[in-house]
Amino acid sequence: MVNLVSASWESLPTQTVKQHPIIAAIDLGTNSLHMVIVRIEPILPSFTIIAREKETVRLGDRDLDTGNLKAEVMKRAIATLRRFQEIAQTLNAETIIAVATSAVRESPNGKDFLQRVEDELGLSVDLISGQEEARRIYLGVLSGMEFNNQPHIIIDIGGGSTELILGDSHEARTLTSTKVGAVRLTSELITTDPISNAEFQYLQAYPRAMLERSVEEVLANLKVDEIPRLVGTSGTIETLVMIQAREKQSSVPSTLNGYELSLKDLREWVNRLRKMSHSERTAIPGMPEKRSEVILAGAVILQEAMNLLGVESITVCERSLREGVIVDWMLAHGFIENRLRYQGSVRHRSVLKIANKYHVNLEHSDRVAVFALSIFDQTKGTLHNWGAEERQLLQAAAILHNCGHYVSHSSHHKHSYYLIRNSELLGYNETEIEIIANLARYHRKSNPKKKHENYRNLVSKTARQIVNQLSAILRLAVALDRRQIGAITRVQCEHLSEKQEFKLRLFPSRADDDCALEIWSLDYKKVLFEAEFGVKLMANLEMNTAVLN
Image 1 (cartoon, rainbow, N blue to C red):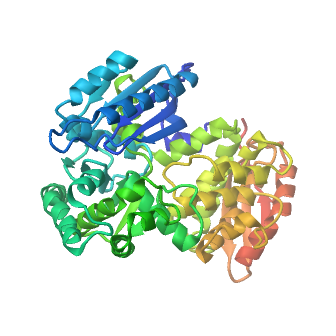
Image 2 (image 1 turned 45 degrees about the vertical axis):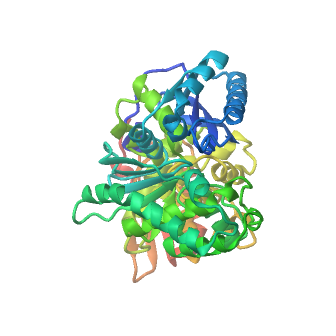
C-alpha cells in the first residue's frame, strides 16, 4: 500500500543516503557567542539539533574612544571558541561554520581579530553584512515555523543590530538591518540605575527614529489586503516571553515556539523594568543575570518596532541565525533543492522525523491517519465543527500514536505521550504539542480523565474538548487496521440523527476476509465515541464490494 499520508505531506527523495553529516554553526554575536550542533538528515531533508552552547562574551563592549574590540574581550572570545571547537570535535562534527555580525563588522580591528582566530584556532570566520545576517535569519525561521505562504514580519533584536525581514515562505521580500541593539543602546544611552526619566525618553525616541526607514520598507512591500504576522527571535524576546510565562502560569513552557506576547503586556513590562535597578531586574524569576543588564533596552526596541509596525502581538520562533547558517550550508551542498521545498511543510517533516526516530511502522500509521481523517471529514458539521488546524493535530497524532513501542509494548500509549511531549516538534506551539501528545495517549485503554496529570496539562476547556472528541475518532481509526495488514480499504459514515445512530460501512481488501478482528476491535473501542457524540455505532462489512489484491 502507498503511504498515502506521508506521500501527501511531502514528496521525499527515494534514494538511500547513508551519510548523516554532523555540522556545527557558530554565531559570534555582539552580546553572546552561540553554537548549535546538528545531525543532517538528507532524506527528509532536515536536521536534528544534538547540542547547543552559549557564552555571554560581550564583543560589543568596545573601546569608547577607538571603537576597537577590547583585548580582554577578544581573549575571552578565543577561549570560548576553543571550548566550542572541543565540544564539536567530541560530537564528531565534520564541519564548523562560523559567522561574525555587527560588533566585529564595525570594529576597526575586527578583521585583525578574525585573523587571530584563524591563526590560533584554525577556524575561519565569515564576516557577514547586515543584509546577509537577515537572509540567514529568514532561512532559520523558515526551518522551524509554518508560513503557509502568508506574509510574516520577522524581528531579530541582537546586541548591536536589529533585523526586520518580510517574507511568505518564498524568497524574502525585504531584508533590513539597523544599528540598534540591546547592548549598543545600553552602553551608549544608559548611565543611571534605575534609568532616569530623561534617559528613558531618549531610549524610546532613538530606536523609533532609527527603525523608521526599515519599517517603511517592510510595509511598502505588503499588499493592500495582507495582514502580516509578527515573529520574534533572539535572546531579548525569548527572555521577555519566559518571564511573562513564569509570572502568568507559574511554570516554564517546554518550548517557546509559538508562544505569543501582546503589545499590552510588553508595555507593562517596559514600565516595570524602567523603575527597577539592575539588581532588582536580576531577581525576576526566569531572568538570566547577564541578560538583566540589557533587557530594558531590548524591550524598548521591541516596543517601538511593534508601535511602528502597528501590530498587537508577537509570536516566538526559537530558530534564527545559527539554524539559518545550517540551512544555507544544506542548500549549498545539495541537501535541499530549494527554499520553497524546504518550507513545504515544517510540521509534516518534523512529525515524520520523529516517527523515523522511534521506528514507527509508517505503513500502519498512514492507514490509521487516512481512516481518522476520513471519519473526521465525513462527520464535520454533523458530529463536530473542528477545522483545518484540529485536523492537522489529529493527523500528527495518528502518525505518532504508536511511537511509545520504542520504549516498551506495555503501556506504550503512555510512552507515546512522553516521547511526543518531549520531542522537538517544530511548527507547533506548546498547547498544540500537548494536544497531539494527549491524543496519542488516549488512542487506547483509559478514557481522558481529570485525574490524569497529562490531561490536566490541557489548560483550556477547548483543548480538553478537542482531545475528548478526536481521541474517540482516533480509536476507531486504530481499530480499522487492527491486524496492521490493510484489511479494510475505506470507510463510509452515515449519521442518522433522528435515531441517534452512526453507521460505518467497511470496505474490505479481500472478498474472503470477514475482518472479524477489526469488527471486534471497533466494538471494543467505540464506547468513548458513542459517549462523546451521543450516538449508537453500528459497523457493517460490505463483502460484495471487496477489492481483490
